[in-house]
Image 1: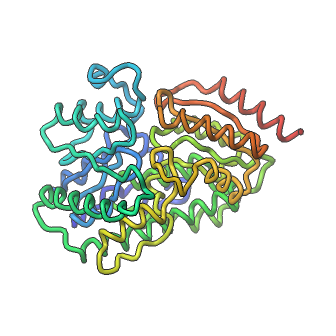
Image 2: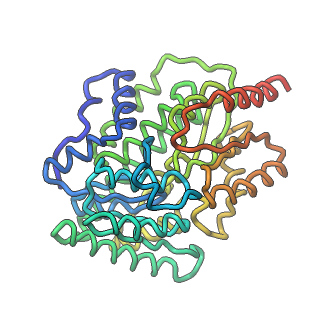
Image 3: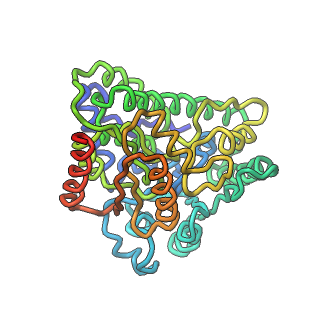
Length: 389
């Protein structure tokens, strides 16, 4: 395991200083934490949205780096794709083409046509290997767990080749324990969002979560262990804002300024931002076969998303349950532009919300948006109609 500390900037600071350091890291498109890891001799596995079993890379002593695009101009990647594709696919490839990040392995998933083809396009433009992790298309199949366990074992062998050393089950158990702590800390962060949303703004919670995709999990755990008590003791007071759930940030991420704009009008008490980092809902017991345990957790103990097809988890019902659990009064139903899974699911969500008579605001976004005035005016009108209804 690489012992280098890649994100020391937040340490020995007060709450505002910690949040500021995290914000600077998230907005830095030179990815300094990845560079520091590599400069210390470490290797990096980049994985595309939405979910990736990062425990396997961590157990191999590799840094799992969440590839989720960036607010950059995809000047080189544009020529590798058609104009009708979502932005996140292009800007993610741009990170490699522009040499903003240097990887030792890239892994994508068949969550949509663009993501499935990303490995081939990426592989034609870099010297390191690119892989597709084939998560089960039918999560309810009796064979899904056995199949996924085998796919994880295949991935482990690939990672062993990158690391130059075997990944024994004991190392994987230790990694699962680290990630269990991380998931518990993120659950606590989201509990603060639900219970006392005035103590953590929507964009602050987002930034604190997103840091986990850029640093080793033990560093993210240390950060969250420090900041969560500070958030709970924060001197803040509730304001007259409606409680909303944001749905639609599962893959391409909304600009941070958009999240900040929404937070000026509403309390975002739950969301699906970076849902892959919170995909597994409870602790995983590694048991005798940690690969099987991770496979079972993905299938049986996970959240929902437009990119997983599981008839046992109707997404419309899951959204209504999320709204009910978080005591939200309304929903913001969004989708990234040109996102086929997101736009398809948006129609079903709106129908379910109409049927349940839950107010909802429908919009779309792109990661490189810079103007939010019109959206803010529309959202403020929506909120005022609810407040004075």
